[in-house]
Image (tube, rainbow, N blue to C red; front, side):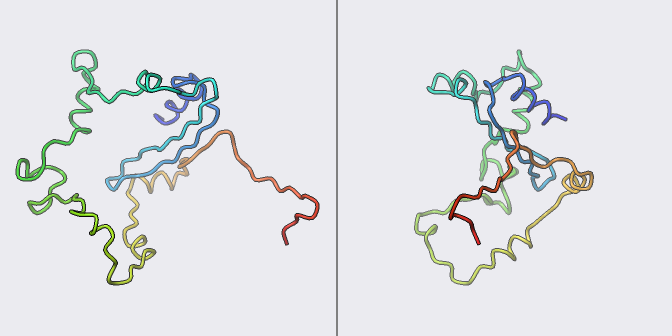
Length: 164
């Protein structure tokens, strides 16, 4: 599995430095595609301290098509968002000839009071969606989260400090 290999590269091969601890969780997008959120805690001697340290490992560039053709094709086809609006009515963000993913026009729209009560629990339950991919992960009991080192709460009884 790709996640295991990625964790092995990060935690055992120390690709980004020596990892003292990590936490990850698997989530699924509406189309059923899984992705992982990973938090790494680096050991003191591997922590990054300057902008140059970050620049050495973080890159936000389109791969060179001659050197990395597969990476280039993947980025261009699935990670780039082109023009939208009247310039490109068939863009993924378009719905009914308008941009569906719009932001409030002013700060007052963000602060405007809600006129009717909102049942947040009902909204969550009504929009909860489990794709076939997520269902298979859950049926076969695949790990959806992990951490290392393991954390366990230990009860400590101090004199005159017991909870009742």
